[in-house]
Image (cartoon, rainbow, N blue to C red):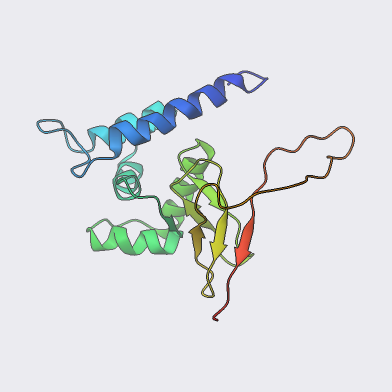
Length: 166
């Protein structure tokens, strides 16, 4: 990445395309390809080492669905698929994926970290159990915005709408 960050932003766009084009298929890999080939291309394209653990998690995460999950939920999915991964390994991989732009961290509360496979800017509902849900694109309109303090610029805005039982 260049000091001005431009190369990284460009790579993020490429990575998003790769997520959509390379990994998002029912079988994950093209017929006749090596197992985990699409996941390996995705990780390497994001500048990450394609370790066995990351490959296993990438195949679970990037299956074509936009979803929200915690390390604990992903650990349950991995175990159901026969993978034996420690929770620390899963947390490390999720943070590496987020750092590379493959996932977004969603701040819901201070007790759990949620990760979102939908990396484009968007807003969230939070249901009574604390689980984030995507707000449909275009459903939120911001009429006015405060100015950033001197010397600072607004990097992003994420609205979280907390829900309760009706």
